[in-house]
Image 1 (tube, rainbow, N blue to C red):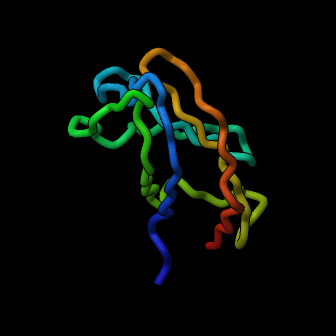
Image 2: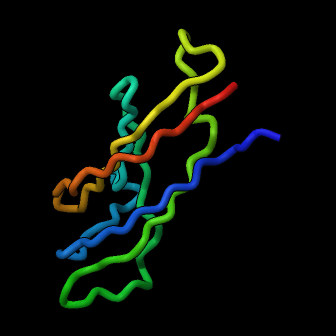
Image 3: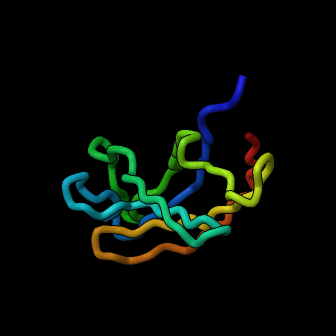
Length: 109
């Protein structure tokens, strides 16, 4: 049975506590850049309405589930392909976070 979802998680800290755009804003919070094509995927941050912000800001672990439909083989790689993603966050003030690089993901048909 093929796997149908990639599960990613990463630790974040937002000193200003202003992470989390409204889904109606048209601006995503999480961006993944494909190492093969430089194309990007955007995702909204999970709901943070019940989270308390401390003097240090907001921190935690973000869990991101990405459906397999987002992961495609390049046309010149018919059976196996490898991809890494650069991940960064953008807060409501348009501040970009540090960039994380995922481990290699191996895609098969």
